[in-house]
Length: 119
Image (cartoon, rainbow, N blue to C red):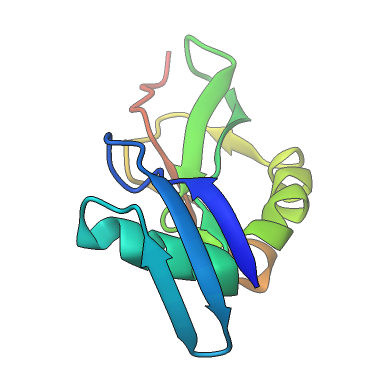
């Protein structure tokens, strides 16, 4: 299998060509080792950090920005967003607080990316 992609592992945005199957992959076009890791992961187990917002009560703003603590499988993104649509938190919340544990059974938490004091 062969695929061409733009690397998003660093700001360089290298044009990668990834070829192979199973455990035998070749990556060309990368300027750093991050590109090689990214290309192989994208072919074998694509993952993404998911940024979003959830409803917050008792704060100056009505939405709290959140994100996954680590990358989740790309195929779980829509399930994650469905779960986040149901979440309501109460202020105060500190940046880094866990808002939702083990989203979609991935073992990865959703964390706040902004501190929101109660008003």
